[in-house]
Length: 257
Image 1 (cartoon, helix red, strand yellow):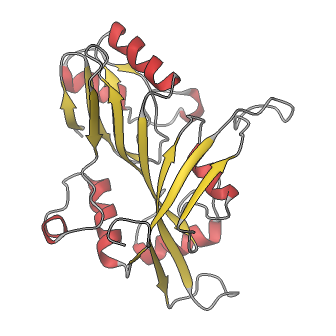
Image 2: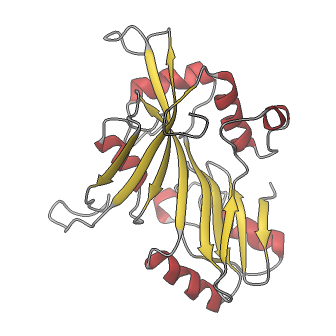
């Protein structure tokens, strides 16, 4: 499958990463056969350089460099927090209007006595919904929220772990979420996946320094045009169905609220 290229010049390329794809080969998932680096290299006919990563289950905007100097400049931008990232997540329960999580994290694969690393995420509620069906016998209804998350640091699984820390895990998160709830939503939506989307990425151009904003094409709130013509990427179409078919009520702090 050809990757959808959002933008490129001779220095960098922004692509839409589908859910289920790894950014590059790793021994932790030796059975996987879909890699963004390999597919993009074959598609563009040139070498590409990773400068950040998205989890296998996360879809959305991914940037890669097209030569070593650009890779160094972009990697430094990520390291020095000179980038701005916006994610979209479907989470359990009614999320507060806004939240800021300053909660240090230890790497997932680190020993228990390893030092924790600072981790900071800013979040706001975009919309909430309540379904009459019960996913848990302790509650008469099922509630969920649409949350925008802006990680201000770049720890692995940071958004997923911070939402778990707030008791609002991401739907479909097999590692940090709730199995029975994930299975209920998978049956409800007819789709088993991690509902986390890399919505927008703002980076300095590695040569000119110009601020570039790359958008996945997912719009919220949806307008009539977007509803009639969802993006061709399967993942984005899944998200549009979720946003279009559920009874969302905008949060006071979110767009449209």
